[in-house]
Image 1: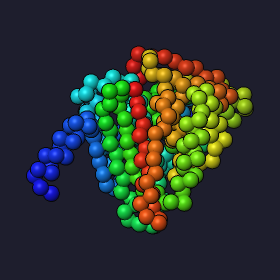
Image 2: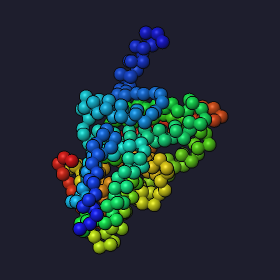
Image 3: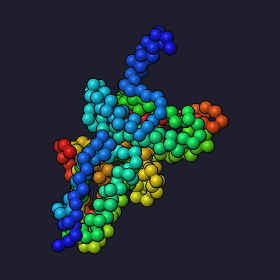
Image 4: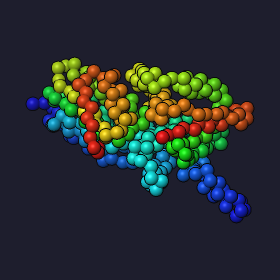
Length: 133
Length: 180
């Protein structure tokens, strides 16, 4: 149907300072999981952005962005925003894009961070409370 | 250093309840080591997971602030690359205390920024954070001026700081952040 079906998935294992990444083009699911605190977030996010740019050329009809972060630094927060903005443009072309922002019960900081993005980004945005991420 | 002095320093650490202290060059790998040590320490001290997360968050922003700043300074004096990081147990929580050199002519700007942030209530801090995130410019290192705002917002405390003029070129900037 589309080129995205031939796209390689992007899978990166988590490290002390970077999250697990699982971008699945076929399913249209992009997962960020763990903590994101690299000094130079631009370096870490570069391959992610490259993949996303390619995916966004011919995106699935429905894309889900799952953010399951423990915590992240302010340097990552900007990179995350840029990714969500990229998907705002995808949504403007009539495709479905939904952001699922997970936070642990009583983790007010991550809940607030989700609310920040929800306020800035014009995409369907679900804040989902879970026992453990 | 005399043995008596070593003992004195040890006693001082005990009395002041210094959980962690480091002085020296802050490198990129430094943070990995600190995180690992403090995760263990936090458990030893019976710190709740919520507080631990907040502590890590603040620590990351502090260390990375110093790291970016030190790299920026590296062309001046080699001494300027050194910094101090302490994590101290207090009666009402835990403090992260940092000290680092900075150029005298940058002091006024930073002071103004800290005072501005200290003058904001939590709702105003939220607005400033969102505005800076949404419209602020990012430097080539990915910093966006959000660090200090984020610390103030997450700790819900005023930023306690001081500048000490060392010589014609450098000042020592100390910052004390309470997490509870």
